[in-house]
Length: 630
Image (tube, rainbow, N blue to C red):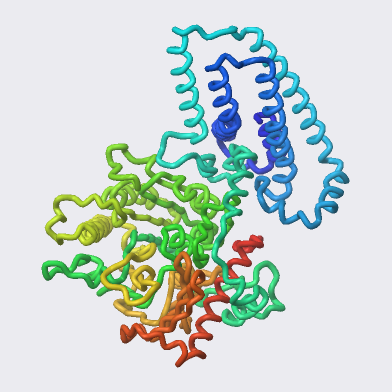
């Protein structure tokens, strides 16, 4: 497998020409490759190890046993080698590893096979593959013969005390090898990512590991809306909404160039994604006191969007929608795709415009595949649990908000003196079970779920108090919003609104027309174009977002795992994929009656609007159109 990785490196040297620390980075990539190779080796060896321990216990290890192992290893490794060598030309063409998309060629298998064998440049890989398989088979038989000669005929009674513990230790080591690490999560492809060079990040990944993970992820059943609207009709509707002419479509069905109308601003941007911060929490009082006093005071001097909704109900949805303008496709976690989707949003757009980009997360970097996804999509520096002192870890989700925000501020201060503006995103986590409530906040309420919100609010207060002392503060736009909501109080509808209704607060000392409240519907997908509008910067908008200061949406669409929602100032439409039940509710009056039959035209309009957006997004992801190629 090291031979395959070396060939992959030698055939892609052009991708590392700009790397300054070539030797050390290549070594890091190759070292990670050995790590992944070991995982595959442990997977393959698990079955033979179990069989060997059992038959050895009964003194049944013989020539047949070793011959069976030889056949097993040769067959399995032939497949592994085939994937590895096929991966080299595949990567050269697609700049990604071999993945489940090859099964899309099944209907044209004869044409595909003909194409492969007609391409003479592939012959060298085929030849090396055959030589490696032959050499491996020869060595396997030689080794088994040698081991058979060394094998003792019997295991004496006293040697069972050595044999059985040895088998147990080997089994444990094999399981650890399969997990690939001691951490909370087993190894994922994101563990190979360590720098901002895409090729070196991918070099360490074992092709077989990548292929199998992608096949498994692709085989999962996800909810879709194919029965609601066709792709063709969805794209046509979405283009009409964005004012696009289908005849102008070249690289993406919704790409449109937004030209700034005034001189651009070199302002810094700080986005704080607040864990589970439902808008309903801002209304909660305990002991006659607000549990979010700082956020409520900040709203009074900011732009506040009070009809704002998260794209989904999971953190990965919030990141993807807020930073890259893509809706949440129900139960699908697009960040965990083994083939990482390349997106177009705030990080890479601002990076291209000379911004320094950084992301701060509280947990392990590979959680939800974040490290790999973010490095591939515009972030230069990522800070995670691996960067923080071990004693600061509070629970399985990492460090608390107060430490994370303080750490982020210190790192921002290190970058701020440079001539380039910065874009920083901070993802908090304290408002997620298990709650670790500091003693100071236990008297806020008898309910831990409110105590922790008060702590999270105070951590943000302290961050702003410290940030105000910095020279960069006056030239910075602060964007605060929930990554998603949470259940707060009694829910009126089957699709709880408090799970998606979140606050959006935009504050900057540089803006003179605040405070202002914007009550038209908006969502996380709108953050990217809205911030670009505040910066007065021209950009390519290949997202589902609009500048909320310039465009008023008729509705806002969002989802939970098994349902879609669509909302305006008065009505809330829901469609459940499992039950196939639709609902239309006059939520502005907190009315629980389903009035769909009375206002069928309104329900159909909301259904079409939301379904078209979701279907178009699904089409773009499927055809890798989420980033416009230059």
